[in-house]
Image (cartoon, chains in turn red, purple):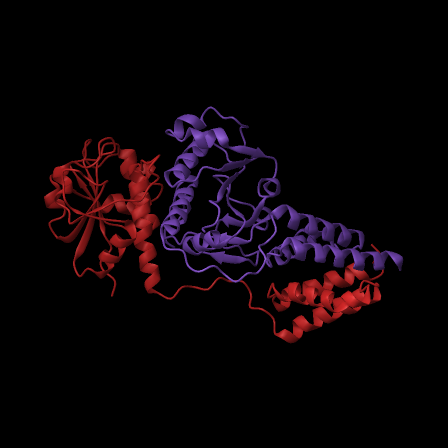
Length: 241
Length: 241
C-alpha cells in the first residue's frame, strides 16, 4: 500500500499570490493538504484566491501554525526543499528517491518550502529528516516556490502511478497480416502494370523494400483501408468531379 | 550516447512574459534551443526579457518561423504537448516514455507547445509523431505554458542522469520532418488532381488521416525515396489512362 500523500508546508510565505500558485501546483497532482507557518501577511489572504486558479479547496483547508515544529508534529518523515548546506550534515536526496521513501513510509510525510526571497533557514532545515534537492542546471538554477512545489508534487504523483499498471496508448491495434498482405499485393500489381520493376534483376530487391516499409508501420485495418483508397485513386482513371 | 537535447517550439505564443517564463523553465534543466512559430506580438518582444529572470541566452538564440512544419523541418522525432484527441488516432506517451525515446533517437527531437489560451490545433498536433501528456489530476488539471515546459524539461534531464540502456536495434533513423513533409505534399497533390477529395466537407479529415498514417512509420530517408518512387509510378500510370 502506498504511503500517505505528503503535506505541503510553506514556511513564512510572503506573497498571497505565491501561496495561491502553490495551491494550484499541488492540486494539479492530487495534493490537497497545505499548512502555513507564520505567513507574512496573515491568513486568510485575499490575494491567494485569484492566483489559485480554481484550487480553492486547498486554500480553504489550509491550516496555520506559529512554528515549523508544530506544523510537522504529526509527521514522521519530513523533507526540506532546499540545496545542500555547508553547516548541516544531513541526508540529501533527489525527488525520485523522496517519492519512493514517502510511498514506503507508514507515517505521514511533509515537505517544507521556504520564504520566496531567502529560502529556508538552517534552523528550519535541521528539523527535517532529509534535504530534497531538484537536480537543476548548475549554470542556471533557481526555482521559484510554485515551480519547486509542482516538480516535487509531479514526482510524487509519478511514483504513485507506477504502482498501478500503466495504460496503453490508444493507437489502434495493427491489422491481421492477411489484410496487410492484401495491400502489399495490390501495390505490387499496380507497380508491375506501371512498368516499375525494371531492370528485372532488381525486382526482388525492390519488392522486398516495399514489403518492409509497408510492414513497418503496423497499420490498423482502418489505416489499411485508407491506404487502399489512396493507391486506387493514384492509379485509376481520374474520377469525374 | 544520449540523443540530442530537444528543441522547444512555442506555437503562436501570445504573451512575451510567458515566452520569458518558458525560457527560464528550459534553462533550469539545461535546454537552450527555443523556436517560435508566428509569435502573436512579433519578435523580439521586450516583455520576454524581464520574465526570463536571467535566461537571456535562450531568448537571444531563439529562432522564428512562419509555420510549425518549417520549425521542425530538421527534426525526426516530434512531440505535441497536449491531451488525447478524439479526432486523431496517434500514439500518446507520458513524459518519462518521451524522455526515453528522445534519448534513444539518433536524430533531433522537438516538443510543440500551443498558444496559452487555446492550446495546439489538430493541424499542429498531426505534424507530430506522438502526443505527450503529463498525467495530471483528472479532477483539476490544467498546466500553463511554463509549467508544461518545466515538467517536460525536468523529465528529460532526469532521464539524462540515469544510466544509458543498451542501444536499440539498427533500424535506420527516421528522416527529418521536412523530407516526410515532401512526401505528404506530393501525395496530397496527386490525390487532389485525381479528384479524391470529395465531398469537400470531408477533405480536411481525410488529409489528417493520411498525414497521421504516413507519419506513424517514421520512415528513413531511403524509405521515403522509395515511397516517392511508388507514388510517381502509380500517378504516371493514372495520367496515361
